[in-house]
Length: 175
Image (cartoon, rainbow, N blue to C red; front, side, top):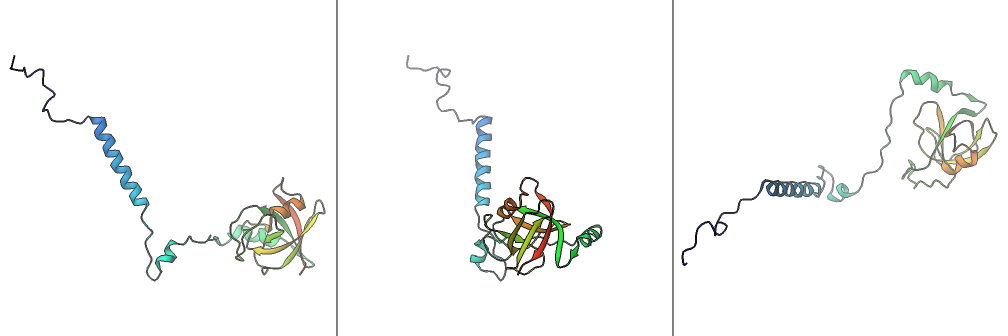
């Protein structure tokens, strides 16, 4: 019984043949590792910029689009009568940075205006309800045709326009 039949030891010494699912699993693991390595690379340094500048997050960029011709007439329809401007006001509740460089705080009585200097105080009055609020300009906007001012969420609550989103207003420069 010293001779062993070859059929009983078929598995011994045979070459390992990986299965197709195992090969695919290994391929996808290598592909995933390569993709993660590509994502982990540092951003390229632009000519003339330091490595530190490339690593700092970029600031928000506000797109300044030219207004189409059909909106120019609508913009001119926003009337200025006796120092007061009439138009539509809206509100915003999140903007990490303002154009003036301040950090945005929705609890402050602030506003965004296209042209008035930062720090200008405005009295915004809802023409339908008569409610008014005094706000300080610290941002640029609104960038929607026909709107004259964007107010913070706190100012919108004071005016009572949070449910509607927009309101017809009269804007007076206080100081």
